[in-house]
Image (cartoon, rainbow, N blue to C red):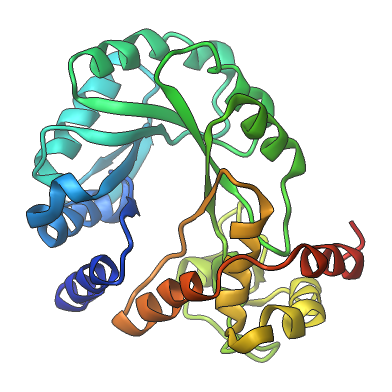
Length: 287
């Protein structure tokens, strides 16, 4: 990525009214946090910054090393994130190991509550797609969010039920299905091996062998007309689906360029999809 374009994109997002920014210490092995802090430093008190911890890495070699679930590492990682972000607090701190066992993660809660009491974090949560793991933190005073996958092609009713019951925030990873919602991806698209969608990690569902997965392309095409209704682009329609799905949802579409930021933020002008459109999508997708 070009840092100058990243800075322009982040600042344009702020100008367009975006106030929630999600990152992680491991993204770019620290570089993402540095860029975010540089872009938003003058507006720190006006934005909500969410980051994550749990993976260890070598920042100089840009290498992922492995997980560390200890409380000591949680505190170490937070202070490193604060330095990179150029701030003295994080609004939302998220545990990044979605498959960790609840019993192993439980000791982290005391550490997180201590850091909240010290003013280093304002709230915290778990980045996981498992409702049982998420709800296992429900008794902790400053637990307030779950980050999980949610998009028009891949609903998460059980997770949303837990979040609605707890009154937490639902931070929606992958609201554009790793970009598949965009018209630029067709059955003939071939992604580079240095693209995470071309490299095909085990969690990747929407792309296979460097190409969009046919079954997901078919689902996207089946609801495209609804998503693109009312002057929206399909991308804006997909974000409108997330906004309509629950009063707790906060979609976090990724962006690389100013143009992508402008398209994403443009979804706000249209508002959520109508209930009839939501029901029609469910009927088409058989859920």
